[in-house]
Image (tube, rainbow, N blue to C red):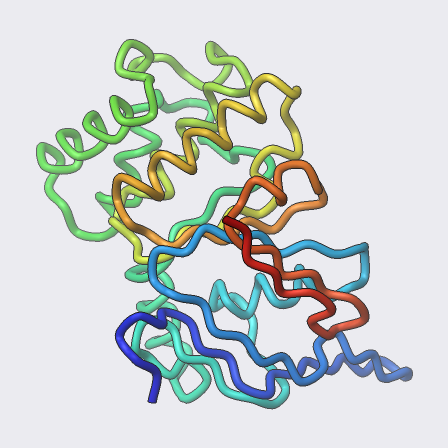
Length: 231
């Protein structure tokens, strides 16, 4: 059983795709991630990082192995329970912000709260607070087309935090931004990690950004090739 400081425990995790030719995307992954860590997963195309991301994000299932997330054995759950766990435990930030174009920043952040059962007034209060946290208190009523790329991504960060997830996964969260905006998003994620104590997992091709995190997990050919902590 994992201790209280471990939020993700992965044991002997493998993922095999078979379409005439067997492809082992993940091969015996063993990995523990502690609560409140700020880490990056990197590797070349085809290394397995996207597959690992989808499994940690409860978007895919492994072929073999066991994964426990925030005390829940995900690999033993029904699809309904997996969906519920995904909504309760995880927040996602994607490379492209995927904001709804006809809704304001405030309404975009309110959406997961309303889906989760919050009243309109409660959702509005929480969403406004989150937009203030990401420095967009004066842009709440702007639609995505009225925001810069960096601002839109900050709205996406606020949306990812809406249901107060234990774990926030960033899938190339700065991959579509210029250097200045990328640095701003990184600093924002770092601040949120420190202030809120949530676990942040960033999947990225950006070595420069990865080396700013506290830990790098490098995948090569479906295996962990490097697992380094930084001061």
